[in-house]
Image (cartoon, rainbow, N blue to C red; front, side, top):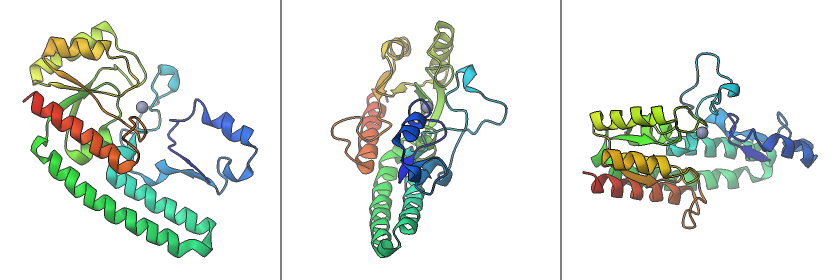
Length: 231
Ligand SMILES: [Zn+2]
């Protein structure tokens, strides 16, 4: 079984790997190929014609959908079903593991929602469009991006517009994924009296983020700190 994020997020490297694996069970459309995006709520699905030639790396909708715990639960349920199909003798075991995950995730989510409640509706800017699902679930308002479009590096003109917008709307937080250069975000923060906060979009982004629960623990703690520091 191969679990993929899909929506072309892995398009740069995964297709040749699948072919070269020579494993018939995980080829695209084979029973062991599991595209998690089919079970999640996908935001920002383009309505018009979008091609990667224009530089947009989100041509099929936003692929960062696991940053909403409700999507995590939907995907876990689909994985349970798939595993049960592949190993019917272990159906009870997979059901028990899912039930445990569901209970722990729902409990954690109650805690996360309570922690984020004081900041409901707060406006933030992010570097890349990684956070629409997170923002929807935790009631934040992402009003601008350091990148003019997903996958397109910042331009001086776009950066000036963003600074103007942040000043007008009183936006103080610039959330940046760990793999982007901090030069432009830092310049925007200086101009706006804002704060750059590096948030992790995935498990493993920091040593301490060893699972899905710790990912939200980490990002929510960082965000709370940033909101409190820019009150
Ligand atoms: Zn992206």
